[in-house]
Length: 435
Image (tube, rainbow, N blue to C red; front, side, top):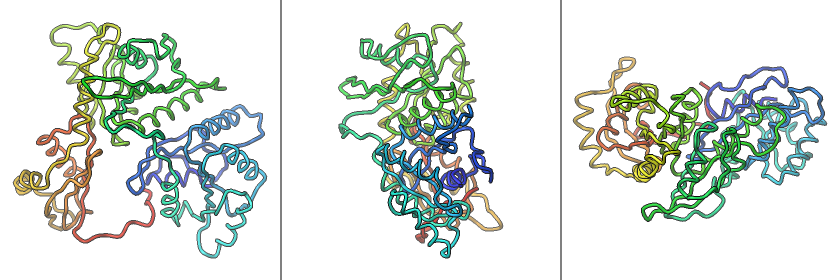
């Protein structure tokens, strides 16, 4: 019915597998999306079959139920061409029992002539149907407007203005819970050598250097899942929600294992959410070392981080209580960096000679000129360069400008966004384009 096509349309890229056959989505896909300046986690579930004995379909059904339980908003996608099916009725009743806000999207409404067929879905009792075409992009912008309007804030509690929410994330059994317990001096979080023993995310207040922190320890296992894949699915969802809630994220890595592909995926999710971050290489006490080891490790890790090499590294040992408070100092530092605002005059005084010396490369025979730069947002920081041809500026030149920003103003541990605009205000694209 087009769930994966809609997922790809919203993300503006082809991430989920798309096929005409029903039930082709096997692996669960989840990613950070953005609309109208609001970031949110989008989950593409498999097709829900209420009654099945097939083991794969049972696993998919449980993952759908996990996603429903963890979501703040449910988007029910139905197929205009098939009309209301018995399964649609069953799913609609299940979604209503969840008590969560629901949006109903009638897909494959490719033109105005088909809209009358879409209104039959009023009978599902889920409110006004949103008539869209995921394949053509029709009315997707309207759908996303409604979606962000109905999203609750990531943290439902009213946050203290002086409180820093610190998410502690990472793979299982890397010392996240032990870190939290050591800081607060009590066994608030269950710690065992068995992976997945953190049952729920626990928010723990901590005062450090007269600053109020709220430590968010991410969950491992909440329920007995039918298959191991569902445990991982649940864990990944909770990790992404914790990232969204946080002001700062510390990613714990097992130093004895080094920086793995999964660690890089987690760091990528943090960067996509535009959250400031630090990397804690825990169990450093177990690594054989000499006077050159630290320097060699730091050089190798920074090379592995690639475009994320702005992330500060802290070599810790929770067991030996080494450099834990230095890690908190880094957290306070990057929190301030995250909120830093650079004056427009300072930006242009620095960038004018830089741009004169290293001009943007011409594209398609057109000379590109940058007029001026200003910081349009902080937390997360966004810098806008105004140009005569903003659409032609290359990725490499964008990276060059970002490097110059970091060289002069730091922003240690903070993802920054560089955008290019024309002096003439452009209309918003009516829907995301898949690339």
